[in-house]
Image (cartoon, rainbow, N blue to C red):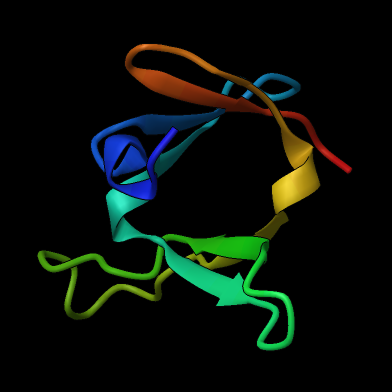
Length: 77
């Protein structure tokens, strides 16, 4: 699967049912030596809430349990 295919998918935490945002709005943490994705940071880009404190959460790439047609399911570590 290409990374570009993940951009429009919602991230859902299976343990809490919380919507963690859209994958396209996340920042990626990449291992510079291997080029592999270590984790992603949800809640990084929130254009409409200028005055609200943004909730950012780093999620390990290994926390992804399932990638479906319109969402990514993660599990708490």
